[in-house]
Image 1 (cartoon, one colour):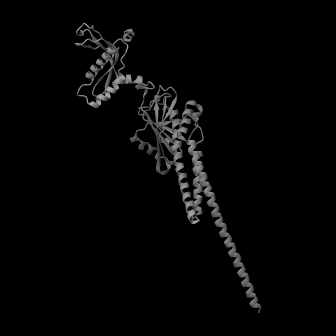
Image 2 (tube, rainbow, N blue to C red; image 1 turned 30 degrees about the vertical axis):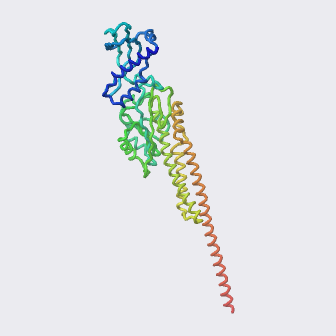
Image 3 (tube, rainbow, N blue to C red; image 1 turned 120 degrees about the vertical axis):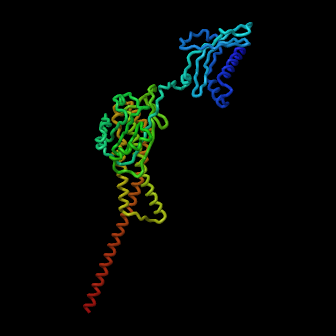
Length: 425
């Protein structure tokens, strides 16, 4: 047995000498040698090779003569690697060398038979967790959400880009989908793939959100300007969020979530509508949360000032403006965003309902709205408190006016009585 292992070591050393010339850098040598340690499984049982079925027909054969002054008896199979300047090629090898102990050398007939080379990825695939081939891995689809206005005229936008408009498949009328790039009908089929294609999509919502699918970085500004021409209530600062969609046709389940991405078997128009609706709500909700945060900060400063001075100097007009802002933000979140309205596509198909529910949990829409509602209640409580103070101030002022009038009336009465008494004398 130990002799057999020594024979294997001899083969390994010989392969190392051939595959790693002295000119190879030491760090490259160590890196490649580690890879070969995982690639070269050599059978410990020589007879298992002889009993195995014959290998498939070979497309090309190379014969390598071997001669040595020392007798070698070895049978084995394994993988050997050849290295070029740009890549590593792995060749499946079957070898059978034999000689008798009396023979001083191995004859020319003792040869190695080589099957056709295969790419290293073919070997590495067997060690993959999911056994995914290169064909199963597609480029990820970038998804970017923007919010830079409070309203978009969808009708004028569709009129200008009728050729790019995709008719809706549901009753939802607060958004439109525009397709740019490829105009082939198969590009929007139920199982169509947009990974790596020049076809991109833009989902525009009436409340101001824009979600871009498969748009390159240098083209984003051009698509945003398209919407800007039909937008009103432009914001001083644009909100932005990024996400990814990965297509994997051989995925065991319909969808699978990950860190800042979602993996689907394929992405079609219904998937774009579903994903876009959640991302559009999320980026808009972020804007309204920041608006409410600003009001909370303003009331916090007022309360701190009251803590130091015992009074506040806010005017009634300013307070009413804050009341209107808080109420309009809550109305926009509930009515415009439709935060509690389930997507029609999700109602019709359980697959898209799964995407819709997963993304809502991923972006924590329900929790964020609960936080927004709590902050609005805090603002409402402060508004009510300040209104009572202003009302008390007004009541105090009126009371003082009444007191002054009564005093004036008393003085006038006293003066009149004194004047009459003097006149009677």
